[in-house]
Amino acid sequence: MTDRDPSGRTPSPSLAALLAAALLAVAAGCATAPSPERDAAAAAPEPGDTDPRRFAGLWDGAIHYVPGSAELEATVELGVDAEGRLAGTIDMPPFDMLYHPLEDLRVEGAQVFFSYRRDSEVRGPNALFAFEGRLDEDGDLVGEFLESRGRIPFRFERIGDPGDPRPVLERRPLADLSPEGGELVQAFNEDEDKARLVLLLSPT
Amino acid sequence: MQRHVFQRIDDERLTAYVVWGPMLDEETRPDAVEATRYLEDPRSRHFWTDADRVAERFREVTGLPEGELAWDTFLLYPPGVTWNGEPPEPAVVMHVDKPLPDEQKLDAHALRERVREALAGE
Image 1 (cartoon, each protein chain N blue to C red):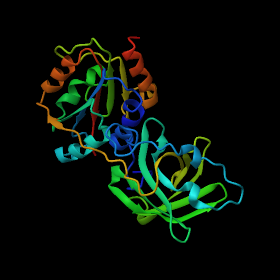
Image 2 (cartoon, chains in turn red, blue; image 1 turned 120 degrees about the vertical axis):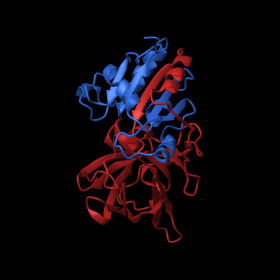
Image 3 (cartoon, one colour; image 1 turned 90 degrees about the vertical axis):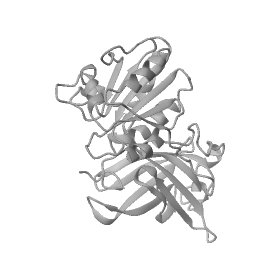
């Protein structure tokens, strides 16, 4: 067992990483579309600038343990409260984390810092998971996710404003296979004119 | 798969069959119902099996040694391939933590390119 994800599980193979992958935003059927405000969000801050508003938004992306293979999807909402302080929550659907509160949010120059706590099988209760990020030239929020095993790169795309609807993952119909998989064979042959991916996966 | 392949290939000639099963001997059908969210593209079809037989049938064409099951494998078939009898030979096999070559480890970016090639008839 590693400490590579918030639940203490390896963000592997199974689905999070892969299928997921992700998850969302621009996906067909999602509730929100990519935001056109990317360029505005990318405005380069002056050194020493602590204005948190440039980080405000609904951000969707992944923590890239192994790019293209083991990725942990997340959606982060960052807003600015009445006192001008950064506040926010994080969703990690593979771990049933929704609107999970962020803490210790702050801006230092070009960087934003925030973290959350969650029980970890490896590190025990209330373990700290932290993000250190900045806006890149495309307006994406990029940086590193800190956990006990090291620093893992992440990239989030701005998909909306704070308060916008978050991506909704819709369940798909699930058909039962007979032991030999006859229904799969039939579907495969009916789609002979298509490129077909066959994925054999664990749902947990 | 959703983010790296399906979101980036807007082609109705692409489909996926996801077979969810008991790789760890503890998964249940409700787990699979939830997991369908992670490949929600309407071009995908999801199946559940509570046995290892289907994963066993794919062992040989994935190149796995005897006794292994093909859970956590990703197979690509180009148009034109049909399935008669045992599963046909895939054009691409990728895997996660299987006793197969490292070069075949899942790389969704590479898989996307292979899908594009298959759709282009290359």
